[in-house]
Structures are given as C-alpha cells and as structure tokens.
Length: 116
Length: 154
Image (cartoon, rainbow over all chains, first blue to last red; front, top):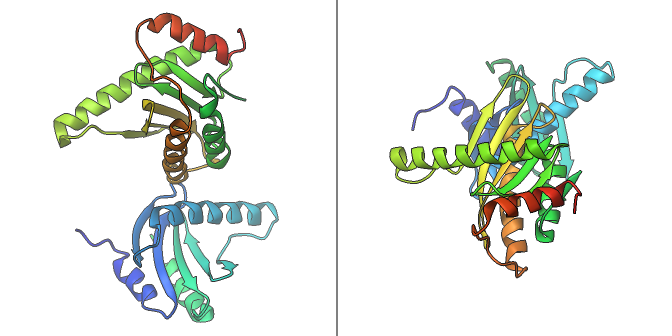
C-alpha cells in the first residue's frame, strides 16, 4: 500500500499517550484521506462525523463573526475529539481522558499548518 | 414529506433522511418499482428517477462483474451543487435500491455512514414483517398503484 504524505504526521500523533487514533479528513466529502487508528475504532464513521462537526463549527464561527476556526475540542466522558483544519483538510485526533491535551493541541496546530 | 408503500420501510427511511440531511430519497426494487419517496412532488418524476436508477444500478452491477468479478453495489456522482448516491440494500424481501440526492448540507461520508445504518435497520424491519416478496406478474399496475399511494391518490 502506498504511503500518503500524512502517514508520518499521523504516526507521530498516534504515539502520544492516550491517543486512540488520528485522521486527515476531507471536510467537504467527510472521507478519510489517511488514518492511523487502533483496532476497534470505526474510522469511517468518526471521519465523516468529525468532518461535519468541523464544518458546522467553521460556519458557526463565521456567522458569529469570530473568524476562522483554528482548533476544535470536544470533551466527552471517556475522552474527546480534537480537530484542526486548513482549507478543505481537517486533522482529527481521538483521545482518551488521560491524554495531554495541551501538548496534543500544540502538535496538531503545528501539523495543521503543513496540511495541503 | 416521506411516503412509503409499505409501513415497515417508513421508520428506517425517515431516520436515514433526518440523520443524513439528504434532499431527495427514493427506495425502489431492482425492477424499478417504487416503494418510498421523499422530496419529489410529481409522480412522473419519481417514475423517471426509478427507471433511470434501476438501469444505472443494473449497468454498474454488470460493469463490476466484468471488471472485478462481483457487482458494484454503490455509486456516487458528485455534481457542481448536488450529488447523487445510489446503493443496493439487501433486505429479507429481496434487493432494494436507494437513490438519494444531496447538497452541501451533508457529505458523501455521512451519506455512506447512514446508508450502512439504513441497510441494517431495513433488514431488521423486513425480518419483523411478513410482507410477501415482490412479484413481477403485473409490473405496470403495481407501479401505478404504488405511485398513486405515494402521492395520495388512493
């Protein structure tokens, strides 16, 4: 299988403590361009829903006059979803509660700048 | 408004439409006979859409057989503003085809996700109902009866 340009980036994110999976998703299509996920993660479903979430957050921020969405964090009982986008591509990470969100945020913001 | 010829189709299809935010959805048999529709206002449009969807599905299935040894079961065509997704659903009452049209209110990823869910729900609903499998004894009168039911003429 051919490696995409995002393989190393996703592998780097997935090595963080508490990260269950990470994806690069097309926001418009809701399809994963590349992913690095643990067994048991329903990658296609998460990719489609996270892309939709990011799109709606972007539209909401636009409507509210907040400007461009730079980072999206969704906290849940056992973990959360983090997303950072650039143009049509969104970098999504699924994390457990024990993950270091601050560090992940820095890494994702840096990585999102390189998304093309 | 969604209308269906058989009641077991209603809940799964309505859930699909609400979740996936598609604009148009038509459920039909592989013969082209309509079973449910959402988004059309004229029966002639449904009839045309069903005939075309059945033909496209049959062609895609045959191309799949020729190329890959197995029929292609889903097809996606993105247009400039609207997109079409066509997919086969296996239920206990035979193969059905879902034709759906959507715009940028949703995405192909979401449509595929909820299509898989619809397939499971329809199979479950079909198993719980005792409707007879479709017959092609009198296709035209069945088609006309179904269209009349969907558009409130009977």
